Image 1 (cartoon, rainbow, N blue to C red):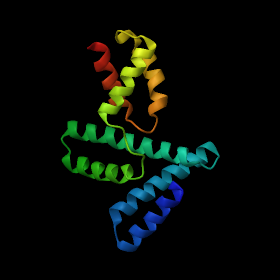
Image 2: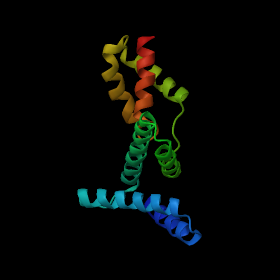
Image 3: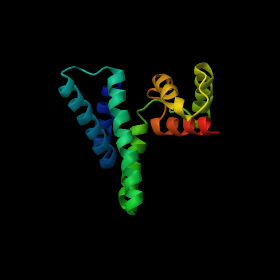
Image 4: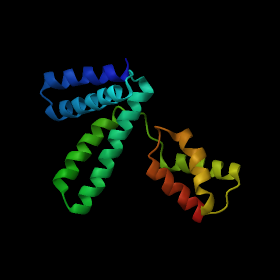
Length: 148
């Protein structure tokens, strides 16, 4: 089943079960997908839908960090609940160790020895990890490897 259809189906199920939190998140995700389709004047394929979901998850992570700084634990919990629902529809994320192994290989292939080559490493590494790893975590791992 296509991801967009899965979202619709799960929203209908959540509505039948009275699960308002899940229903609202799925409704928001479908609206974001629809908005992306309207903006691009196309119908999104699986990769396009995954990109929209990835952006939504990233927004939640950023909001969680901002709310934690502001001391708003009530909003942090809400955003974490939404993020948990969104992540169930995203591909499995790579672990820090898996990212580190790929980063070590890319650094060796490029012959980069210091932090000045970080842009080269990130440019080569990110297309390989698209949708499988958070860019912030990849950045942290590469920075650690190049400064060590």
